[in-house]
Length: 368
Image (cartoon, rainbow, N blue to C red; front, side, top):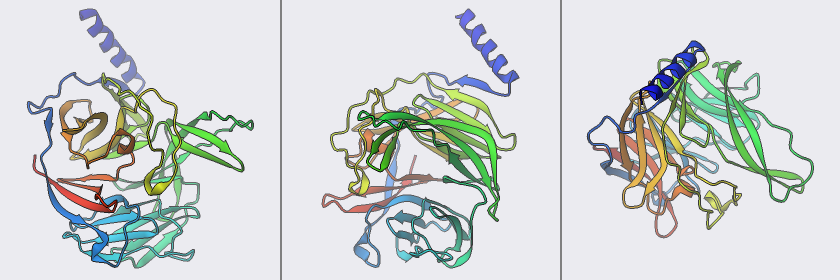
């Protein structure tokens, strides 16, 4: 044991000499209440029965400073107040100023909203009521708008590797590297040296290529210019310093991966078909959230009567807590990564599907 401890210390010193350390979290959380089911209480439930909008495939829910929230849907960008009352649709179909073909992601500020469209690429800033303030086109390619970290807008651009020209019926695995970028309010894009490799599984069709994620780029802003990133199949968190523009720490956990079982129904949200990806295990990390400067790691450990296991990790690698987060009924591991789920302070926003198949947006308060 003493020899192993000395070896670990040597590894940490060696890694730190090159600006990065690897920290293995302890086997047990520090909290004496670890392992509990998180206590939550339903605060409100919103359906499209109130009229003026129609839920098709509600996704990407974000909280607003006034206690309300926004919901991105197919051809809709819906705003609700703190009581769930519908306030308006901010989506304007078209190609002119303030108009969209499709919103990929958005960021809610104190008094305005910044929305990103990938094709044709542009940012649109509007007030809370949807009035156009300005729109601008980035001066370099942007694939994903991630959000804000401190005073910076953070985006990412992915590489496109060469694809075999020969059709492979079994499909092929592609290496995709994401590079983080800073975007100014005028559209100036600055690439960083922060790169994170992921993998896609792809199949060629006549005149097209379809792909699905094997691993995904997940991120959470921690404050003070720090971010947490997960991008691989195994349990590993990269802590990046945006001021230094480098990864300063890798946090790993001795985690037992969950065996993958093929999905019975390959239809995704909205009825779209999904690829049957070749894998042996589910990705250890399904989602990342930053809550009070700590990292909530939504794992692939799912217990039907309890929910999904969430680890609470400090930015230095402290294993602070662990609890089970109740999930909407009928959400299994195949749908967990795609489940609209937002944690904002002491509230949780998600989507639940009624017995008649109609989706509802539900807000829960955390009582724990």
